[in-house]
Amino acid sequence: MGNKIIIPGKLKIRTGDLVKVIAGDSKGQQGKVLSVLIDKNRAIVEGVNLVSKHTKPNAANPNGGIIKKEAALHISNLMLVDPKSGKATRVGRKLNADGKLVRVAKISGEEIK
Image 1 (tube, rainbow, N blue to C red):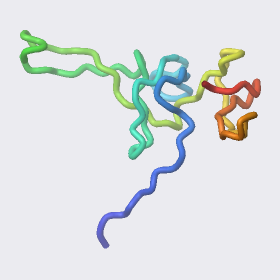
Image 2: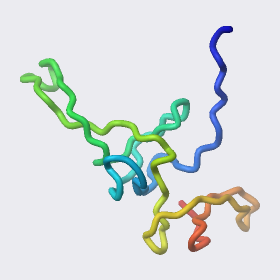
Image 3: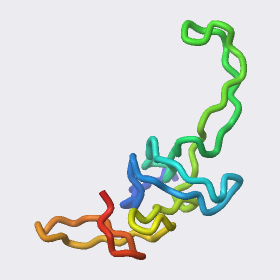
């Protein structure tokens, strides 16, 4: 009985990528990935999926109050933006000239930096 051990898979989205939201309340919005939560298969995207968070007064925010903050989105609701065409694209992996495995956009075949 006990807890199941979940081995995280290889994610196609990394920190710093430009992504588009393809499902949910924030559908159609674009933003840069701030962080990826690998164990939960989620990512936090800049300016997307904002939630209101109630905060107590502290040193950083002496008055407290309600602040807007990005919440994590599931990876399946995000799609990478093609660096060439600017459209949402799937991600493939190919060996480059140096023999290193790199991510490529399926639409244009362009390498994703």
